[in-house]
Image (cartoon, rainbow, N blue to C red; front, side):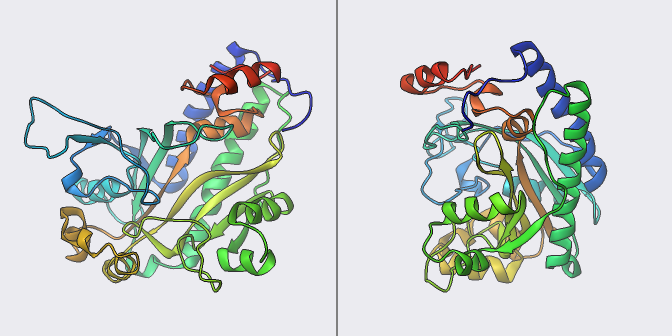
Length: 333
């Protein structure tokens, strides 16, 4: 973090700015990607296979419902809506190149809280229908550019209201694969590679998350049953306040029948293919799609030059973190 940090906005101005960013960005995103707002679930039945298992080790928050005793193990609070959205596209009858976005609120109990991570997650989840011919890198890159343009347009707008915000964002996107990062920085960890590259390329899209690299390792984990690992990635911005790379969005073209089978088999998850969601993909009942999640609190944090995600969202933090933040002029909400 930069030395002698002090927010350029008061608490009142911060709340006003958060509201503006969320309203304006929703408008920019929906306009550029041809999306409409949809209502989404906060919790799901685990037997549907709709919940996202992220890296495969995170434990969902679950709870019993006395009035619905036939849900085995209780309902699960969503980790994300990656699979639900694709099902909704088919159910609601969306046409090609149109789709939905929604407010997603989640609890990730195993997240380790720090300046960028909270057990409370809020993001815009979006999904749109594509054709088989649109399952290519060009379509992915164009969509990434559209999202970056939406982010930068909202950032320009908020700076007209609060010109004292020191943050600068670039519309120029550098596209790089995880293998190219490993080749550039063979002795670094995945996170170290991200920081090194994004520092030199302040708006970066890192492609092919989940694929095994030539070293035999993976840059990062990704569930096998929603993104096509060859056609996905993470959108990163250089955060000049924290002096580190910040992931704003994880997104990608979704698996078709072939890629779902192959990726589930690679991770030893063939048993998932019998779940209702997976059967629908394998049978061709669900539309081909692309989509992702865009962190709401992270986007506000980035645009407003905040040093901690707790400055733009209300969550729970370790006592020593709260005390440390106070000493550094960081006011947690």
